[in-house]
Length: 253
Image (tube, rainbow, N blue to C red; front, side, top):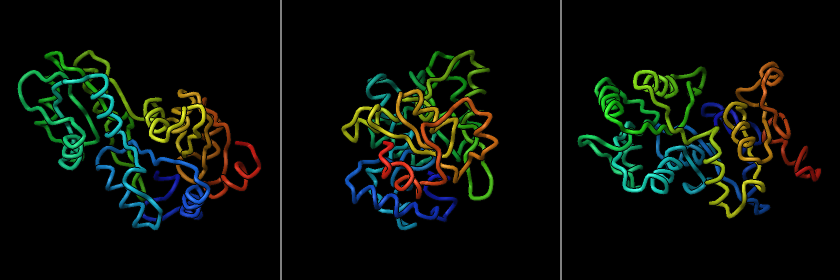
């Protein structure tokens, strides 16, 4: 959402009106975020604080997507959770309680801004003993208002290197999140359009899911990065404010 709907605490010009127009026309949508350091309610509250029309149920995070994956494909697994207290509580509410006993089946790695040596080391020993590593998303860095912070990508590689394993990663660019969002809206992925500012996650996910994509140039991607990237969106536009006049209202979708 950062770079697509807002920058820091400032809405991108025309973004609030874009979301309102989606509602007015009855076009279903979901806000997707890889950030797993807060529960979905945090992101919905943030959008509302900026003046967006947003409900908690409009947000699909990589945390929720991971919980759904575990319940569907790792049913009954004992999960050692590496997460902030708020996200651990959200996972518990989603049916993924924290397991702190011996020999868990899964080590779940999220964007834990409270991570410490004890958590890192416990996860390492569980993985050595045969637990599966599941990560909410693969991002190396997380955008902030004026820079970037270290995200969980380096921790994924740390565990993979130390333990000789490969993580199961759920969030963007995995097509799983788009498929889950489409299911929530009662649509097939081929009828969904992915809008985002990051080629490596947003646009790549759309490509993997076989759906149309719109790259907005209001965030991470500039013309130089676009020119050298292998990922090419279906459409490219200045921001979400230009999607209706330049794409939808011209009948291109």
